[in-house]
Image (tube, rainbow, N blue to C red; front, side, top):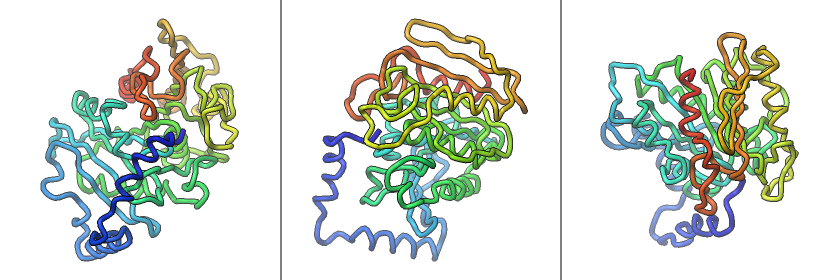
Length: 329
C-alpha cells in the first residue's frame, strides 16, 4: 500500500536539495496563512480558475495546511452545473500521482466525459505533501496515528469547491485506491448527504460504526490475487501495516444490508479474467456492485502501478467502470 523504498527516495530527493536561502516549510505555510487572512482568494491559483486545466488550491483545516487539485475540462460552462468526481490517492502517494494520467487516466476521463475532477492530498508530515495517508478509521499511517480530521478537510474542500464552481449537488461522487478506497467508504458513512455514490478500488471498509444518513451506491473493485488487502480479509505479504483488513465479501455484505438491497446478486458482466455482480432493489434507488479480476494484484484495473510501472489488471478499467456506475449504467 505504501510506496516502495525506491520511490520514497525519489520523492524525498528534492527536499534534501533545499537552497539555504529559500524559505522553510514553516515560513511558507505562515506566509500562505497570512495571505488567506488578508484575502481568502489568495489561496487560489493565479489567473482564471474556471479556465481549462488543472488548478492548485490550499486551505487550512484543524491547524493543518491542506492542498487539492481541480481539473477543469474544456467543456466547463459557468452557466451549467457540472458533475464532480473526487479521487483519493493510495497510502504513501500524493494528489499529483493520482492526477497523473500515466497511472489512472482520470484527467483524460474528465475531459471526455465532462466533469470536474478533484484530487485532494492526504495528511503528510513532509514538504510537498509527500507520502500522504488518509484517516480511514482502522488505517492508515500517520493520519490515523494522529487522529487527523480528514472528513472535516473534505467538508471544507467541498464548500470551497461549490463556492468557486457551478457544481451539480446531485452528482457528486468519489473514488479511491487502497487507503483512498478505505477513506471513500468512510465518506459514504459520514458524508452520505454529499456523495451519492462511491467506487472503491483495492481497499475495504475500516469504519467501526457506519451509519449513513441516506442510501449510498457502492461499487467495489478488487483483484483475487491482491497481496496487500487480501480478498478474503487480512493483510497480505505486500502490506506494510499490521491492520486486519475486512474482507471484500464482508464489506459488500455490509452495504447490501445498509442499502436494503436484495441479498442475491445477478451476474451483469463476465469476460475472461473478470466478472461483475450487481445487487438490485436497494432503498432510495441505490445500487451495490462488486467487480472482481482474477489477476493484477494490488492495482488500479486498466491502469499502471505507481510503484513498479507494471500494468494493473487488464480485464477491466476502473476509470471507465466507476464513471459508468456513477451514471447508472
